[in-house]
Picture 1: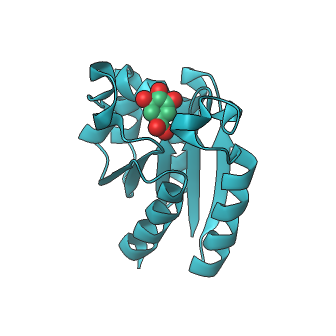
Picture 2 (picture 1 turned 90 degrees about the vertical axis):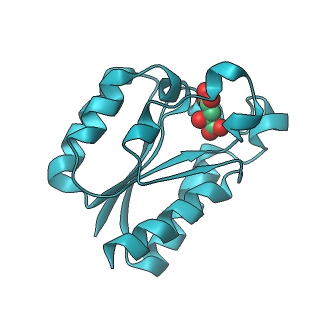
Length: 143
Ligand code: DQA
């Protein structure tokens, strides 16, 4: 089964960016760990990152034909993008929203997520392990 793992803006800087909040692992490390777990779970992963809102939306639309499920860390677009919510609402399979940090413990403007209105599950504050937890949940939902 094909699963899209989509990452939003500034996550390309993971490991260098505010490591006290996001940790020292890079996005390449996260990708490698996800691909290994995906193999074990029988999931074929398409792992991507972009800084562009329209590209995230295009990928979600692409997932309509190509993916059985989506794991998404929309980063700052979580809190701003009705367009991303609308795109996810056009997708039929399971969607799990991941945040490395606990957004509820942080600034007020991070407490609201547009994406959560569509997500079947939300994982926040579990560090990069959150991606692994999301993949395990996807495997359950697809089985
Ligand atoms: C984030 C949390 C967002 O508020 C922030 O804008 C990010 C990363 C997280 O993974 O904790 O860029 O989605």
